[in-house]
Image (cartoon, rainbow, N blue to C red):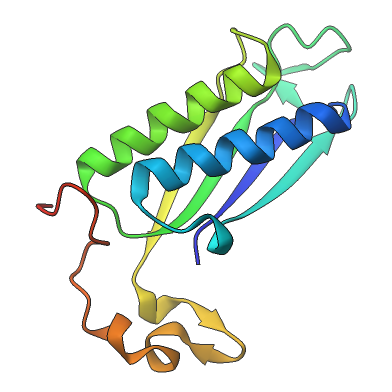
Length: 142
């Protein structure tokens, strides 16, 4: 199942909620996945608990450490570009900080590399084993 890990400075609950909604919408609209199967985990840090360019990040957060890791079934190059732009735009919009642009790593996996309830996803849902190499999105060609 697709999921997203987000590392960022501590933010108020309202910003975290706005991020959850905006990032989910960005991912689902870019890939065609259902929102119900998309999870997000926030890793927030206090001042002095992250570094950028060899310097500890202070309370001003002018240049904070921002990072996302997206775990997803394989996507076409076009879909990757769409989701990267959409997640970045959603992040900037939800935080209200135009200079906050996260680095995003996309970690793709075939369905047989995902375990849910102790079984391979492709064994639990045999139709997934027969799906094409790339998750079918609006641009079916790899």
